[in-house]
Image 1 (tube, rainbow over the protein chains, first blue to last red):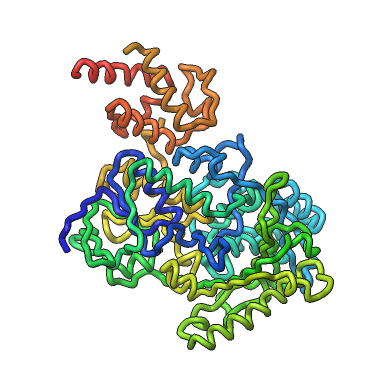
Image 2 (image 1 turned 60 degrees about the vertical axis):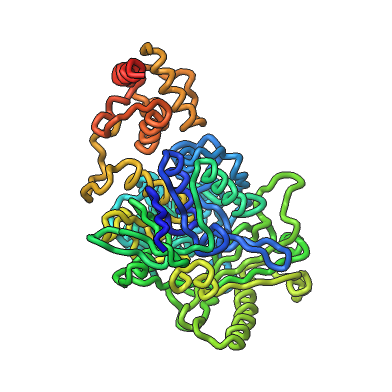
Length: 486
Length: 87
């Protein structure tokens, strides 16, 4: 019971942010241990095998992709800070993505890793809004990578520059789908971070998916001397005198650490202390995955990488009243990245993601749950296919399908421990990462950075700010300006 | 250690933490962050590498002394030499 493991830093959760923080801390000589309840690393960006195939959990695309040589970007920062060579991540750029609105996607804006493609699309579809759109881009470029630290409404901000609600919705749709935990609106900072990540920068993917990146992180962590304990979650945090005095593991063992970084979420961390102060997350997702015997382009679906679609007059981003909202969603074709001549995925993949209501999926009897999944599988794919070229013959998808899988909010909750299966966490973010306990900090999705690159940057930033740079237990509320900066 | 050796030690660190920067023409009298893409995160790494590799402590109040290669040499060379004298 009291075997007395003692660490400089304990990290809860072996996802991207926890591993990135661990690499930083171990590299600079801290005795670090990461505790992970699951048997695999990755958290919300993990991977799994099923029927002899490998699947990514969360990854559609790595956002924040910039080519080699572009300076001062989040990708460049994480590579430097983690001492990773760009080639190790083996990122391959997207072919091109689309926002498609209207019952059949008649109104479409294309975007690629070249921002001028989106600029040209806006100028042609919304000529009177082109200046306003340029104003938004300027604002985002002038926003520091971690945001301005202000709480504002993205919609109110957009409306000061863009006066067409259709363009407002079309710009917000991908940004919300790829990172908003807030219903119907985004925090202005989150909007700026996501606008940069998706539109100014872009999408990429390693041929073998997120596991390539996880392998690199694990290797760096191990080389730096970091420890990790798998299938060994943290059951509770022992609080004494306003500090995390010890962590009780699932095994019952107690571990002491001078400082603790939690990547598991705000409300989830609160729950370890027996409290429920934090606002619970709200938005869940459901995703269907079809494995095809040929690339989607050979079915006649073109070479879209990601399609963000919405069939209604306004784009609604909220917890749906029913189990799934099929009016809008995301189509992802992992085949459609520039993997290079002769390189590509052996099979085709067609993924469709929609908003889902956690309560409507949880606590169902097993046979009802299965039947509901089957029913929504067809409904989601049918809805999404309206935004793709029609197939011939019409049942070509079914004929080409060799395997399927599907996850719901309860699947996500079960495997990641994130409450209500909410992949973007709490609607209220905590950019400073401080908690009620003086030696406990948050990193990861509830600290407020987004996406694969953002989550790594979150772990790095929190480790730097609170552990590597600060003297322990320093008083809070340091300004953003560091007078001592060279 | 001479000032030039000290500058070399600092450049070696920068080469490792920012492998994508061209360090062949760094001017010693110009602020590093004015000629290279270095931010406060990177300076934190320089400070920590100085500690890790050379056992030199730079308190946060002195970070501004690392602004240029010349100021690094002026500030760090005596520290290097004091350490060498001790051992």
